[in-house]
Image 1 (cartoon, rainbow, N blue to C red):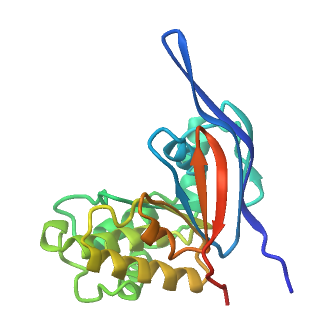
Image 2: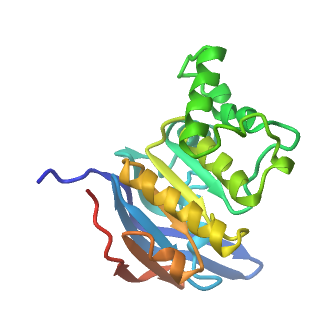
Image 3: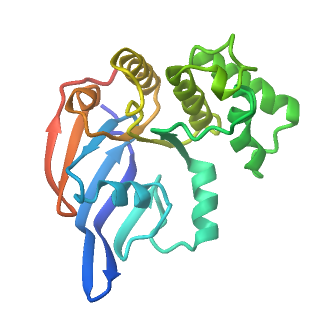
Length: 238
């Protein structure tokens, strides 16, 4: 059996903030590994460090100390410009509130990361073809010219998922992807994420909902900036 390579390796990650005379230890020695092809949930109460951890994993901030390797590359000490380049090349983001551009069709929202990818060198026609293909894969082939206000919440989240996938990222980070959806739409989005994961997409998801977490392979529980517990959810990768 061939062992999957680590996509995320976080070693003794710490992130401290100074608030007046008090030091807040948002991450206090967190170690985490996520292998290629995994689907992992991160849970924890308010103040547990899960948002800070996602910001570090998403290269939105650097840790105060510790090591973070993304797809084998040490990104622990990169500056803001270098982190932005890593985000655009290697990461896809799915947000609770979708973060779509208003008055911009689904197609335009999905093309946007390709427009900023200076290394891809796709022509405008190739960018459009790729975005249309991915919108079809998430079930929106007949909605590519619809603006966000013309789409349901579930459809908007599908646009967000397509946008996250268009640059072929090594990792997709999902922050409460069902948080703004009703239970039916939320289940449909989770079924889509499971399907994408079975096709090889590596996903790390923050959620407060234990029912949603059970769609994943395992759940990492944080408490006081540390990993308190890791629970296997019984899924099997093919």
